[in-house]
Image (cartoon, rainbow, N blue to C red; front, side, top):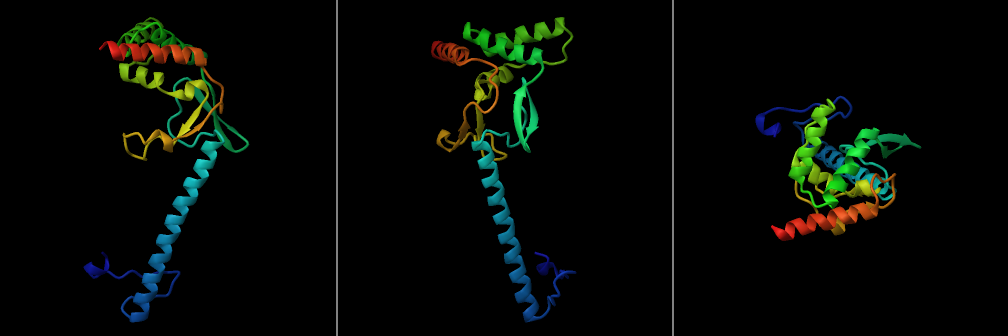
Length: 188
């Protein structure tokens, strides 16, 4: 693109003459090598992230509500966060298991926050996001989406590492909440 605009690139580290056949050849080779390096670096980085995910370590992104991150032996892992956050997550699952939906749970949490001067507004979508996140069972899930895309990948492409960090809720409470949510969907 630069060449089409009549702009020549001069390198400090590689002595090229962009207006000679040899210089054009060398510049083309350097571009191919640079492209190879970048693609290889991307693949190696993804391979490392996949390995970390398989081993249950956090590979970036937002830390889920109710957890904090710590570094153990050079790897990031999750631990339960502030007690009130953990209790809030447990309450969300308990209320869902009793048949409440995202709107009602969000309203209850917002009323509680106003009473206790906690500066956080809950939305039904946030509540439902928590209720669908297996991280609260102690599982790490990686590769759910393509970077920058809201679309989920096929579940067969996900990397799930069970028991990779302390669970905030029990499997029994998860199952009860999921069952109640399914019942709500069917009744609509």
